[in-house]
Image: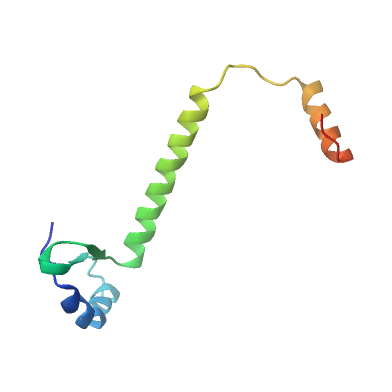
Amino acid sequence: MANVVTTGEARDALHQIAKRFDDGAGEPVYFGSHRRAQGVIVPVDVWEKLLEQVEDELDIGLARHRLAGDDGRRLTRTEINGVFDQLRTGRSK
């Protein structure tokens, strides 16, 4: 982990940090009380990539969970048509 700056130092340097990000420097800035990391400031493009990766991992986890519970049974065309008919008429079984 990189050096940790105090919360006050991070606050005071926020404009400079944003400028560095705009200039292409993508190093995260760790901050916290007593130099113990409590938060991190990252460029928005880094944040968006991290979010994408997390969302992908969540999707993979959900897919694995659903596959684990799959009993192999598949609906027939007649069953599917019946469901669509119920939806069109607004009634359910």
